[in-house]
Image (tube, rainbow, N blue to C red):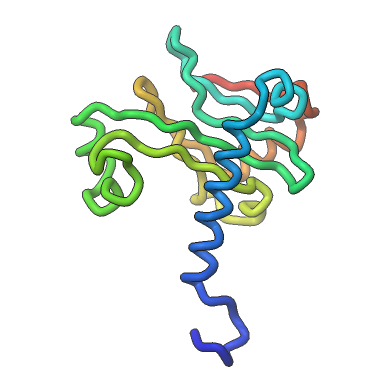
Length: 150
């Protein structure tokens, strides 16, 4: 793609998306728990007694935002579910401590059901299509979230 092609540079778009994700993640971390509860739309947890948060979505003036907390996988799950290049880019230790991720859920509207979220914690490995998460967010009322356990 060149400057005359009329399209956006995909590298610039990717960098902008990563930067936005960092901004959303820091905004999530800055929320007071009571204030977040007032705007929460979706909350997914693991089924263990730890009830690890897998994903949260909330209403903001900028649309529906999401946050996936960092997590750690066992060495066995790490080796069987990822490749070395992804681990180098998406882990804090280069191996099995996966970093948090965040962004604008509305940006995923209209994507195929093969696009989704890995819902992971130290205990659970699951996934959910973005369309189903968007549907959960759409039917929820801020402060009365759709809650699911995996």
